[in-house]
Amino acid sequence: MNRNGRRSSAASRRDTNLPCPCRQRVAGAFFIQKNGESVVSFVSLNNIVKRFGAVTAVHRMSVEIPQGSFVTLLGPSGCGKTTTLRMIAGLLDPSEGDIVIDGQKINDIPIHKRNLGIVFQNYALFPHKTIAQNVAFGLKYRDVSKDEAAKRVRDALELVQLPDVGDRYPAQLSGGQQQRIALARAIVVEPSVLLLDEPLSALDANLREDMRIELKRIQHQTGITTIFVTHDQSEALAMSDMVIVMSKGRVEQIGPPEEVYNRPQSEFIASFLGTSNLLDVASAARENGAIRLDVPPLGSLALPEANAPAEGAENLKLVLRAEKIHLLPADAPADNRFAVEGTVETVDYQGQAARYFLRIGDTQFQAINMIDKSPFSEGEKVSVRFQGEDCVCIAGDAA
Image (cartoon, helix red, strand yellow):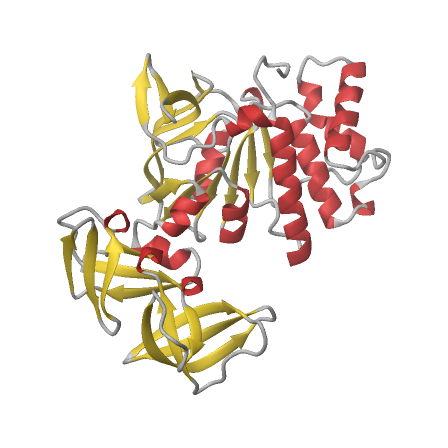
């Protein structure tokens, strides 16, 4: 238990990792079903709207975030994710709707009374203060004794694995170290919720990967409910218990990373996450627990009915992820996979893998394959193979 009386262990956090949320209201609180058991929603956004004059930046957003979870708001620039985070933080007021944390509506509570930890893109460290003074800054506004504050600062620096830098100044630290200090300053106040606004965007690629692992470790160790904003899909997929994909101020899909990636519910998500081949479906028929599709130029193929949209869906599209396509020499023997002949047009060599641009009939496809020896050559005929169960059929955008 932490000082707020909440479970803070990794086990507590795993209890809220919800593979397929199902919601209900009980006594005014949101609950989410997991394996038949109810888990209370710790942060609720209820019909949140944010307008800037005639422009609506967030449209009727309703989201429930379990206690101890790591949730990511993911989407391109201008989708409303940072605006949403700033409303939770108290830096912006919602035009409509309610924000509830731990059962308390916080719309009218000022930022310094919301018990939140916030890490911004630029870290916002005070250059004239030591690292220890930077970390302790938020404790000045809380009823914490000098000795307790010193202990909390030491503990926070230990947690971010920088125990010996307290007497230094921000300019004496690397970018990655400064990022850790900003995180230590946010968690030293023992916040109810930790808000992270693209904190890794200023770091180089290798350091971003290292800090991604560190952030996840720290969140596991503390059990703090964390809301993370990013436009980087690899960060969202690697770190999150739940991903909220946004586009043009609206929520497109909510779910665990593997569900959002492998079962996209819209053309936007299929195109935004990963590399997909998105094909028009000429006709569809359901039969014996499967759906059979006619997809030019592939022809006829069957998918499990679980990979199909609801009956009556229109403008159907087949989603085939690039990494689900396996390329073999054109004369490779047949197996149990769907196969069609293609021609390699372009090879994007990436070291351990290659990204191929293929021509099948009149349509260009993309495939991403690991390389054992050497990649296929431009102009080479190949056998293009995949499993029907690796495809998803979705209702496309209205024409």
